[in-house]
Amino acid sequence: MTYARIVSTGSYLPSNRVSNHDLEKMVDTSHEWILSRTGIENRHIAEDHESTSDLAEKAAISALEAANLSPDSIDLIVIATTTADQVFPSSACLLQDRLGIKGCPAFDVQAVCAGFMYALDIAEKFIRTASATRALVIGAETFSRIIDWKDRSTCVLFGDGAGAIIVEASDTPGIHTTHLHADGQYKDLLSVPVGVSKNFNKVVNGSAFTQMQGGEVFRIAVKCMEKVAEEALEANGVDIDSVDWMIPHQANMRIITATAKRLGIPMSKVIVTVNQHGNTSAASIPLAFDVAVRDGRIKPGDRILIEGFGGGFTWGAAFLTY
Ligand code: ACO
Image (cartoon, rainbow, N blue to C red; front, top):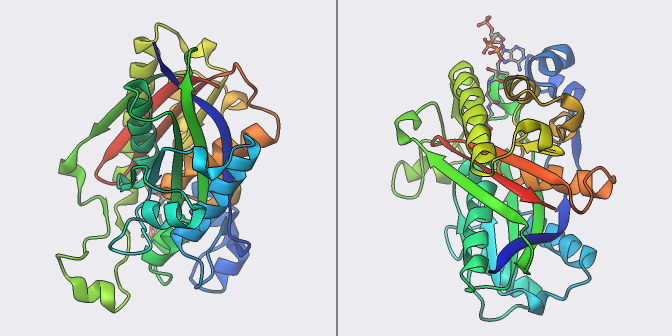
């Protein structure tokens, strides 16, 4: 039996760090409001010249270096992103060219903030079915490009960044199970309601912005994250006490603490980066994963529950041994 196992992680944050106090100069808000409602203090914003594939490339190189692997050993590239560089080719193909990798499948996945869960699920299936042996799975976003920086209800929440993991074939189990869901009836609660085939003029004139009904998103996100985490635990016949670390999508500190409370996991076992990264959408889980690997909290053999939730709505979880 072939399993898929995570062998390394990497990440990248743009150097431009924007604090709540910086935002106070741009919109009618305050550090205290943002901190108390979201837990966010800082976020990183890409420079105009930095694209999603630039961020993805730096995260990929950091994951390759961590495992002492060369790019030509990769035979699958999946990038989860909402903010691809171009309509096409995919950011994954742009990255493949930058890394000098030739011939392997490379594609983007779009499931907004749950995108990394979808990308990981796909890579796990490629590996388990022997269609790939070593995959580069990335969440990368320049979400700041689809934010109205005059809208205080959304601009304080998001940031840019990229996280990467390398997953490879193994004789011992790594990713035990993955669980994906979507429900398109909620499409209007969180969206950028324009694109290539609808109201393209808004894209061209730079007003393709995120719209959100925050209260509703909050309520449904907590419910779905709790349910999918329970689904993952049940599928593996384990209870929450046997989880060493939970890595939730980093949308909002209040969503994270509410989910942890409902699941009965102490916050000391929950990896939190939203305070310093904001919500980096598909990048948030692999970014948080990498932070906790590099600071020594996550160690080989640890049992980890990861879960994401995003526009669509889309959501998912995975239970794995690192
Ligand atoms: N600064 C100051 N005041 C603000 C700001 C701001 N940045 N934004 C909104 N307000 C005001 C509102 O205008 C409102 O004022 P009013 O009462 O005079 O009308 C007041 O604050 C309260 O607004 P609410 O929306 O009720 O505030 P709430 O406590 O619900 O917090 C928030 C808003 C933080 C967006 C919350 O609903 C939330 O966290 N929702 C989840 C959404 C989320 O995290 N989305 C991320 C994307 S989805 C995902 O990744 C899962």
